[in-house]
Image (cartoon, rainbow, N blue to C red):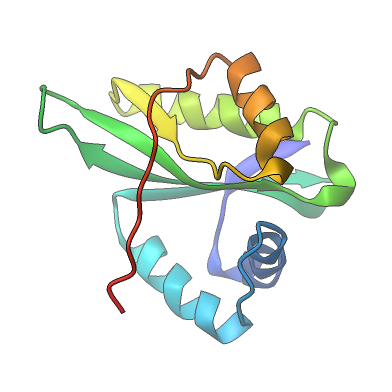
Length: 143
């Protein structure tokens, strides 16, 4: 298994992984979004490869605290291909994300995960990785 930075050359597999997260999209739409992500220095996207196939993704963004000095990393996208789960790939992606966050001086890392029943296994994984359930989230569409 290898962890590496994502590039536009990976967009077809990234599209498939985003769909597995439950977000149907098109290749063209994701190309546009990924161009914006790739051009921003505050975003960082890592891929996991296994047997020369892209099988996992973790997307992060740098954010600044209002309540204290420093900055944090928010994981905004995290998925392992359903055919490759329970093989340590998610653990390795998360460890590499944490390592990158530390290397740039982040003082914290966090993520949100839906409260749907199909996410319970993921929630156990996060807790096993040392993440603490801290808050409840709210969202509102502005469109």
